[in-house]
Image 1 (cartoon, one colour):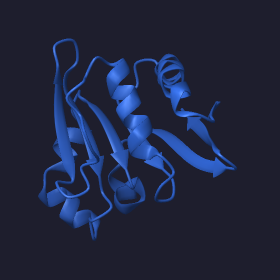
Image 2 (cartoon, one colour):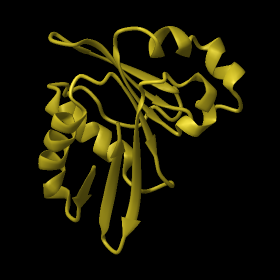
Image 3 (cartoon, helix red, strand yellow):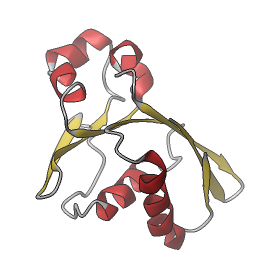
Image 4 (tube, one colour):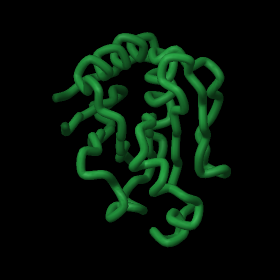
Length: 137
């Protein structure tokens, strides 16, 4: 399944479409080069989930936790600074990934062997001024 975004005002509709496509999935691995808009798209999805207290990528903190009255804790990981999977295990990533919470992950290739089998892969690439979002369920 694919979505295309060519302007910022299209983010809201793309996030809505994304949530319809993925249904009740809980784990999402976002792949894409630096600057492709992974954080921006995740923030749009968080908005659609009713979570308004996000502000930036958790690059330096590695994980941000948000709370939703309807969904409980929702996690946003940025594994860019992780050196190896052992480091991710040390911060307790396994407990979160295999729990019942929703998890959005940037740079998941850093922890490839730890990803849940039912993780939805999301690939974001750029073409001209547009972003192509490919969703693999």
